[in-house]
Length: 358
Image (cartoon, rainbow, N blue to C red; front, side, top):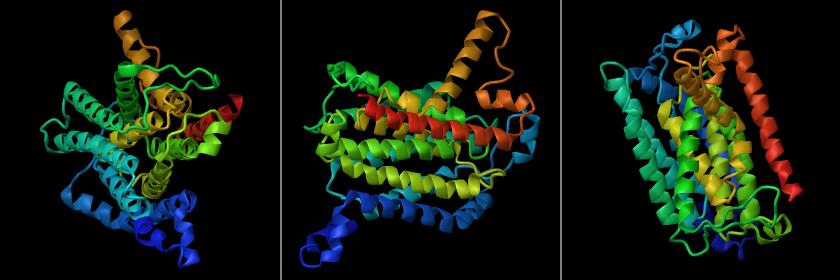
């Protein structure tokens, strides 16, 4: 909104020219979302307490019993801060901005449905896995149908490292992109099991994807680095920055020991938009590296369940997802969280370093 209001006057007032720069507005979006989250956080947490929207804790991990009743659905604060910051700093005439916002709110709505059902249900169970999966798929399909209506967007697939390999998947690109988004949403949801464990890696992944978004939207950089060029998509860098700011602001309250949990409304929304941003900047395959921590957590569940069924009762890990396995081995929760954060940061740097391997 600030861009649309002030940028037209940049020729008359030179100091307003800064609003023409995506980098400046991205920094503004990050700081604004961060401060908005921190300022509104205490009031928001008290509001959740008054509503008695407390987290139900499974009894499998003894150390988690003292977390029962901690306010959940804090992801609503992330969604609010990101949305307000985006509307304030982004070019509202850009269709990619609105699609990004739709992705955030769409996946968030599925998470809200699940969270609200848990809170109001008799057995603290949300919607069925089938309903949740179908709802996520519907959101992802809607996003792809709308995205493919934009003339500049194509169905090519960018392969990391190999600069000349860009196969066109045609209509097969839609189910592929849907798998990326739904898989990413569920991966972050599975990772969100310890205080602050998922939110910091999401911030790292959003920052890395924001850099790719900026490079993809800038013709000179995309040509030099052999990235697919998509005019206008650089504006979504502001969205990525707003997500980073909101995540850091939420971490202020979600860090160990957590005062609030983000719930599915936060984890599904954040996971879904990581997948959508990867699709948007054509880094779907590289998302496996950027979000390698989420991939490892998901694989730990898949392998655990598969091995349990195949061997009729035996387990690979003490408990899945992976972070619970380390907990049951006696490693303190705070140490697990910090180590996972370090791994996330290293994976982000690895993904960025692959830009020069093309």
